[in-house]
Length: 353
Image 1: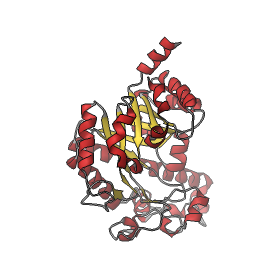
Image 2: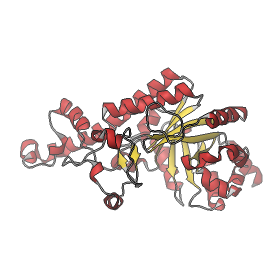
Image 3: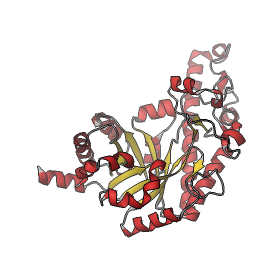
Image 4: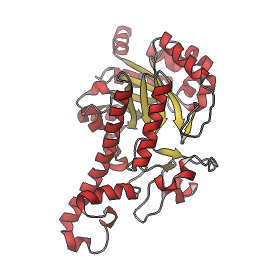
């Protein structure tokens, strides 16, 4: 049994860990805590519209970067890859509103997603967002100004620092309700000469028939997914031009069917088409067997899948079982969420020995 475990664990090419922004203050002790267990860290440097490095583009939460340059040098010395982890469309959460006038919630309120009535998500209070199961305020992925803003942030990170990769988080819509910003609707109207917010309007069935309305709704949903896929494709091309060796990865909803239906995140297409180097399934459940099985059915290149495990909600014994399950598949490996929980209980590291 011991030999079998060693063989299984040796197949884990990816042994990663997410390091959230609230942990980077402990940067001097991170590598000692990791104790050689990991070969890839995902370091959060852009979140809630703010940079944790001296940026010329966005509001800054941490003005020094000597620590970051030292961190990257030490990681390279230890043969550990570092990806810059950025929150993409998730721009603000439940904290009190920022007063920084450069932040998009203040400078560009027209950049945010809207519902069918034209109500911006910025109009929601915290209680209403919680009621709807939404974690915060999202930028509109189809808005070209939003895309350029995010592209510039990625360019800045790759220009200033020697990262091994760019890691995208919250690369999705918050809910099916928020698809009706002007940019996305305009794109659809150019192709179909129909405003998607009217697909459920009065007289629409008389005009297109019940079957036709159903077909148009499916086309609209596919259009939204394809447009987000185009964002991924465009960003991948920019990253390759900027630094050909840089990896691009995305944290994704683990159930690909829900990801496509509820968040318009068609990550199996990203994987199968080579638009990303790998995706990281956020499989933070007690039982991941079904997730592993359905994912294998959905992807042609399982080596482009890393499985994120939620050590914040499971015991070392449960994580040990899940690591074994992943190691028995063709997936590339595992990523622990997150460093903060690992720091509190380094016993989790023994499952990777």
